Each structure stands twice: as structure tokens, then as C-alpha cells.
Length: 100
Image (tube, rainbow, N blue to C red; front, side, top):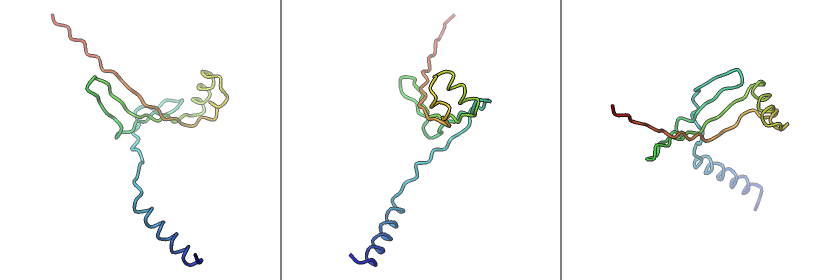
């Protein structure tokens, strides 16, 4: 393949790739902010199941104080390099009815 053919092939490939890419960005909403960090949840990931379990992806962005606290809890030096982490939170809804 000639140099010109490779350039044309690369340009066509980039055009096709850019047309097929779907955005996967999360819409993170702030729900708590403390001196050790901020918690955000992905609004699009919030879901409920028939057995009263609610789920949502959360992202925690740590401050220096939060990194130090993570180190104190885990004892792992990697915790001092931790900037943020993402986790799945599941909450079980339990309703107790009392009839008088």
C-alpha cells in the first residue's frame, strides 16, 4: 500500500470511528461534601428492584485529610495516593407497619 493509500485509509477509519462512538459519561450529582471529600452519585444509574433494593453508583473524591484517614484505616501506603474511587451502593428499604 502506498503512503497516500495509508493516509486515506487512516482518515476513513477515523471518520467511521468518530461516527460510531457513543458517549458513556456519567452525570455525577453532589449529595454530600465534608472536609475529607465529596460524594457524588450517577443520576442515570439509580435503579430500584422489586425486592426493595435501590442501587446507585457513587464517586468519592478525597481531600488530603480523606487520603490520610484512608491510610490510617487501611494501613496501606497506596491509600495516600488515592484520589477518587467509584463504588456501587445498594440500599434495602424495609418498611414495618404497626397497627394499633
